[in-house]
Image: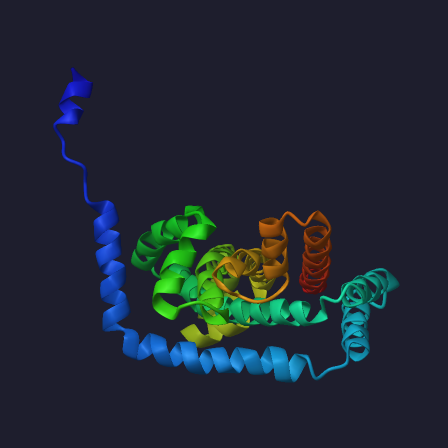
Length: 285
């Protein structure tokens, strides 16, 4: 009986509505999307091709190793792994792809943090904002990553810019959530003491709440960076350069060896980034 009743309900035109909305966005905001695609794309190509590629691989590897050495408290483990891992990527002829991947990850992560931290602060201070933004974050985190490639291509075409756009949507929620959580977990006694000494809202935020929530926020940034890396690989399907494109090419041609080598490069980069960000977070404990 119930099945027969449901058959009389017409199919909701959700797909058509999404298509219409995307086409409207593309046309209505083309004046914004086109300059972003051109100028931001030129900037990322400058960073990847002119800036990072101008640094000799040996110098870049040593700089990363020194960063890992001092960040880890002058321990050699991470520094040695960085040297061996990055040398292996260069040895396999994927250095240019590595620089493209590093550029995409850094820019996507930086934009995610710049956008995510203020939104997290807003959510921690405003109950209405928290109630409105929380389901949006749920949507952003549960939607399959491949779906974000569709509007990215519609708005920006193919290349590095849509890859960063898709990564930005996919990687921002952890920073927002952890910033919100960290500020909410600050001891009420500390906040009341700041109020008692006449602190303004700005002083209380920057001198009490954010410093106390730093560890939690850094954990969110670590997750954002790792999600940006995973999304940058997926974004190779829409023309984003880097190691992900080599994996995709190997998959299309059934070249197991080439895909494995490019995959190893991604793993090495992920481990180095993860360990450095985690170590920075531990130093703040």
